[in-house]
Image (cartoon, rainbow, N blue to C red; front, top):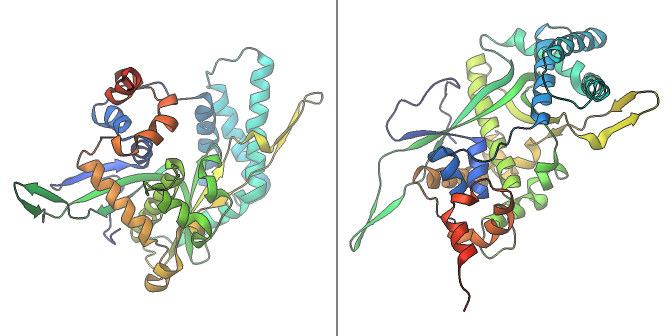
Length: 364
């Protein structure tokens, strides 16, 4: 990753520069052919939008709007979030099978708001207020506050006849991500992203040290001889790298270049933490927040740079981005893993030549 400042809202102007985002990285890691269909050919696959995404959108907006009011008192913050949710819910046109279900789902959302305020909301609101007072310019509250990181691509070799030439033209890719708000925590600037659950983090959910199993699983995913295929886990580390680098760029915009950056995810739809009393019609829930920074950084790189970085992840991210930019969409090298893990829920199998060839091949 470079130290170059990037305008999160800018388009790509220079030659040899392309734009990716974290979702496209995850699609490519699951299957390069699926990425080609979805992001290059722009074909419509199965609809991935869910009612859970819509409800999280309501909570995300309600929380961010409450934070924007600047209330750091617990009751004031909770009241502001509930009032905003009530307004949004009134316009929410999701179809329910009964009024009882609609009332229940609203109680779940209200309980989630209460859990957010109780667990981290007050502290984060105070951190947002401190950051706003310290920043010289720039927005710190979203939702979907854009961030971007510019990744320098490694040189690629092309064969021309009997000779091999190395491309010397400098190339880079801008990778976009987003957080829902940013707050100050001591000398750190923290980006917060609301997600449905933390299940996609895999090992990152339970480990907070790069050297304690995270590094091994990450490198094993890219090792053809290792029995590991975990694209969602790898994407979480890539996303952390992009967000933290994007936060560095935003710190420059805010006039706070001397801060370290961290990345936190907060799940808003984890029903495993929810207790329902159907007789009293009450809902209680709790939130488990996850700081991904410690699992991402390696202390060797940190010792040299004094920044939250991981050279292994950053180098692999550049290599994957380079493959995507070069149009390397052939899934043959990982086809056994892809066919087992990605094909069963892929909306593009009907037009995928790799999948069809596998289905109609003759053994023997």
